[in-house]
Image 1 (tube, helix red, strand yellow):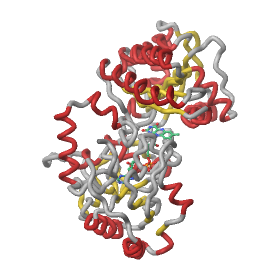
Image 2 (cartoon, helix red, strand yellow):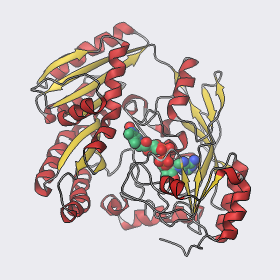
Image 3 (tube, helix red, strand yellow):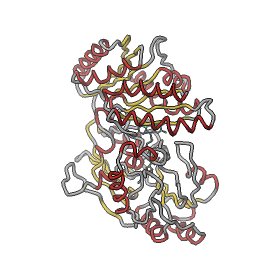
Image 4 (tube, rainbow, N blue to C red):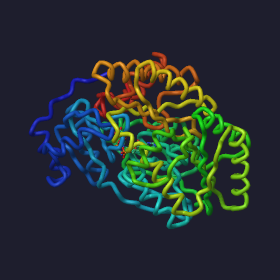
Length: 467
Ligand SMILES: Cc1cc2nc3c(=O)[nH]c(=O)nc-3n(C[C@H](O)[C@H](O)[C@H](O)COP(=O)(O)OP(=O)(O)OC[C@H]3O[C@@H](n4cnc5c(N)ncnc54)[C@H](O)[C@@H]3O)c2cc1C
């Protein structure tokens, strides 16, 4: 689906620049390169103009003009998308949200916060913790990604296994629709049974239905204690069968992450952080439990130890100090970045029901042998969500094309066969849309497209994404 877009003229640029002021209107090559690509890396599309507004009314004016003139609009958070969701495929205008960076209210009485979408995830987390409160969604990019981007991608992170993803914490949104109208999706309440749930519809919509300009999030009390274990396994499949078994024994860890040996080794050499993996180990699990009662958490850890031993786990280590815990998390959060430093790569966000993980990983390695690529896997094993980093290394152009199209397709077909899906948290964006047919029949895709058209009949909002 695509419309006939107007080529942005100098009159358009003058009109739009006047809305935000010349300091916040960019047309130079350096900024076009920055805002025309994102962390995904492989894609660049040239925007005609980058606007950095400071309030909702400015956005409404920009968008209503673009709607009238049929100019494509792509909204951008921090640009850490891993599905090329922010690249302006049809050019036009970028609306950058970095000036929407205020925490408007931390409401202790109601355990809520009202924030702007350009607030960095970690900034909200720190502000909440300072009040004894907790905002759990914590993508590994939490030090840079914005809350608006988190909502638009329905982002997760290690804590999702116990606390759920971003969608569990969003109560209400202020949104500018593609025609410039400003509206609230819901109310600042924990319950809301008033027809279609537009708040949840916006979550995961990747900037294709409207621009989020204000967010009400739910907070919870901050748990008093955290214990962290590292468990080492001789093979990948045993590590993954251990994962499902922990839940069967009645324990829901606050994080349960899997890292393949090579991914861990590359990351410690990339970061210079020392936490060597035993020579015999092929995979490790990072397991965290949290809560208010230390004794209960210690019992949970003993149980986890017993369960993992029965899955051939050869060694379990406790992180003794806060420093050690932080160091382990710092390494885990850098795995994606370290993978990017090895070679050109493609990160797939494969997701299956948790107990099917061993089968998924086995099949991924078989597909790798067939297409001659190395893959390093890591991620949120407790959610059945692994990031498969496929490395290009010495593959020539023809072999690499086969890998990222047919090879990736085969991986996603395995996900489907195992009752899983093609993305758990990174979204569809520009690069995963070619696989949508694997998971959705035509009728389903048509329904999605009709929802898009109901919001955006002129198809100006982030065109070229999802479909
Ligand atoms: C090293 C690294 C680790 C990562 N780890 C994780 C992880 O653990 N879990 C996870 O889920 N993701 C992870 N990601 C992916 C990424 O950080 C998330 O998808 C994040 O939510 C994107 O936020 P952003 O502000 O960078 O959004 P952007 O990349 O700028 O935009 C993403 C999408 O959101 C839309 N958007 C942005 N702001 C708005 C708005 N105000 N209104 C409407 N639409 C908007 C954009 O149009 C685009 O479609 C990781 C990325 C990196 C680089």
